[in-house]
Amino acid sequence: MEDKKPYTEQHDINNESNTENKDNSSNGMIIGLCIGLSAGITFGLLNDSIIMGVLLGIGICLCFGTALDFGKKGTNNKDDKERGEKMSKVKIDVNNLDKFFKKGELIPAIAYEVDTKTVLMLAYMNKESLKKTLETGYTWYYSRSRQELWNKGATSGHLQKVVSIYSDCDDDTLLLNVRQTGVACHTGSYSCFFNEMYNEEDN
Image 1: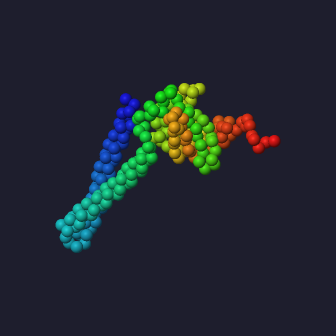
Image 2: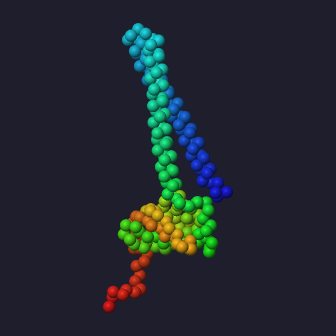
C-alpha cells in the first residue's frame, strides 16, 4: 500500500490540473465573448452593420479564449518540467531501498556542510525518512529516543537543504552534503562535534 500512495497523489494532481485547465479555458471564452460582443456591437452600431459586428465579436472571443488557454498550458508545461528535473536528481529507486537496511532497520547518516566544510552531526534514518529526504530535498531522520520521524529544522527553522547524498562501499552508512540554515546542534552549537578530546598541535 505504501508504494501506491505517491502514484495516487500524482494521479490526483494531474486530474486537478486537467480540471483547472478546462475551467480556465471556459472562463477565457466567457470573458472573450463578453468583450468581443461588446466591441462587435459597438462596431456594428457605428458602421451600420450588426452582422459584421457580431462576426468581429466572435473572432475576438475565440482569440481571447485561445490566448488564455495557451498561456495556461505554458505554465503547466513549466511546472511539469520543474517536477521532472527534481525527480531526475534522484539516482535510485525510492521504492526499493532494501540494500541500505540489510544490517538493521536504521542506517547512520552523517551531515556535512558543503560551504563551511564542517561535519555537522550524525543521526539515523529508516526507510521512510530516507525516502522523504530523497523526495523532498530536505533531511528527515528517525529519532531513536522518540521513535518517530523528524524533519530537521521544521520547528526551529534550522533546515538542512540536501546538495547530494552518497552511500559508502558497504551501503551501510550515508553521507549527506547539505546547506545548513542556522545551527545544527540542539545545544545551540553550529556543529554537534565540539567536545575536543585530542589535539596534536597543543603542546
